[in-house]
Length: 155
Image (cartoon, rainbow, N blue to C red):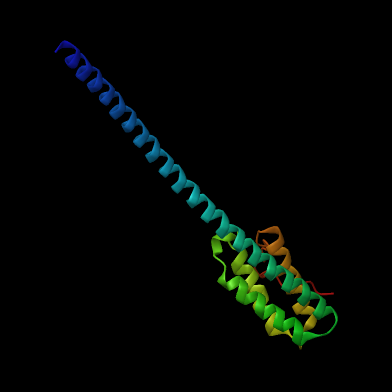
């Protein structure tokens, strides 16, 4: 019958439309899955960065407290806090800080530990420099002039 053939043609057209819509929805779901994956990666990166910043702040707090202990001539507690800060900073990814900051800070803190308790003034200076390097997130630039070939003036 003609009516049955028309109904079958109509149902075929509707089925094709539904298949096209289903394909579009599948494409949209793929796009959503890609967006979700990208967002998860960004959140993971931000979380890692935040965790590194928290560890950096812990180390800086320990160095602040160590500075206080050095000024109070409590060298044992100062050294303990510096050693703890060295451990925290040593575990940080160097990419968290600007180039050279972590290396210079650890170098300065090793000097602090070596100077305590016999040379507290030197320890305090290196501790202050290490703290400032972390705060500024840039190494201290110091250029040391080579020794002069000239004889010192007599007088």
